[in-house]
Image 1 (cartoon, rainbow over the protein chains, first blue to last red):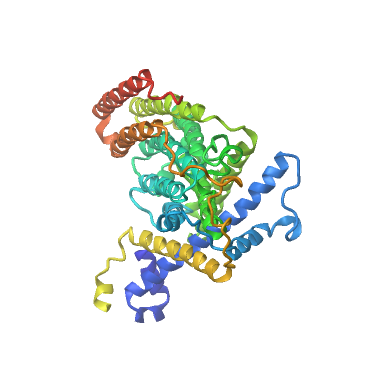
Image 2 (image 1 turned 90 degrees about the vertical axis):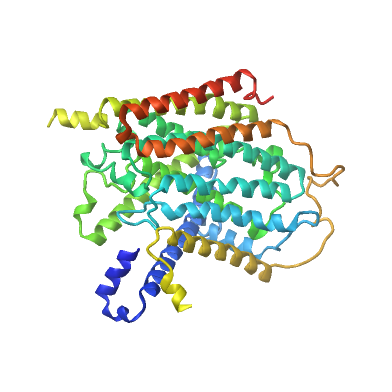
Length: 371
Length: 127
């Protein structure tokens, strides 16, 4: 950010009259607003696409009334949520009830800060990127438990407890399955992880193809992350047919809307992390974006990153509408008896591979055979 | 004020994080305030009561929660701490070499023994 501010002052001499901190601050606020607008747009359009995909998969039409083909449905939904009464049940714990949606929303949004959108396009390139995402997304658990407890409602309490148990159980496999990407890159910064997957036509350098264990850890990550964000095969905390939507049953209007936005934000974060850690991030296949003039390279890599991330979101929706829901005992067994031991063994496999072959992946070996 | 602003280190990589969180929080609060300003306010005893599919609740909502949830919480703390420990190890793996691998294998092995113990004790059974 600082270097960007310096180059901005250099190219626009008129700015040098303003103090340096003002330029930096203005840049950061602009970046923040851009990322926030992107997140909100994604969450709105994502909710529409989710319903359209659901319609197609279930052989019905989906929303088609507002605007051509229903594409303005999400705007209508948003306006409707804002115009509803702000309702807090009489017996609810008012302070905690109000606090919970903010925690969930801010926790989900905070993860957007480190997403590597393109060459040099991170709102903040923290040197503990992956770890930071794991840390702030845990904030969601606290919000969900608070919402369940503060509602003073049996369904909400049970849903909140189930959600908390599920999210913490699946957080371990998610965290463990991301470690192979860190091992290969030797850094926690998401930009470094993406950069380590460059070269080899920009396609075969991906961690997905690095060795069989990294391929497997991508699958483990995707499964566990689907569960951590409460997507359908694992949507027990919401379970409309048993818990009448769980921890947020007493929420309505815009407070419910904040939970809803956070859920879609989490979906994007999972897709973005999968893209950055396993699918080469913003590396353009068969092409080196760094060779283009700066602005074009940034834009091209941004487009490629978003295309990959949106494809992952579509796959998540596809899985969501294809598989039936698990039972609670199956859910817990899946995490503790299958995913946790598998991620452990997988981690040992990846580190052993890196040790034996001096950090080289299969595509690199093939490339060195052919010179 | 000006002196305070001069003393802030804007190059700190966590500064944008702070700004973004402040913007997100401001927007969330703004949405709620907007909704309070625009939405209707009509009192109704039923509407502000507890939602239990149309029936008045007979017992308080603070039901007893299965002890399994506490067990899951304890297991989570154990294994999450371990994941936390593995992150710095993963960053330094290249320079640690074989020593690092054996150290980590022993560490993970001990925890796997713990998992097997919890498994045999039935801590992972849900019913």
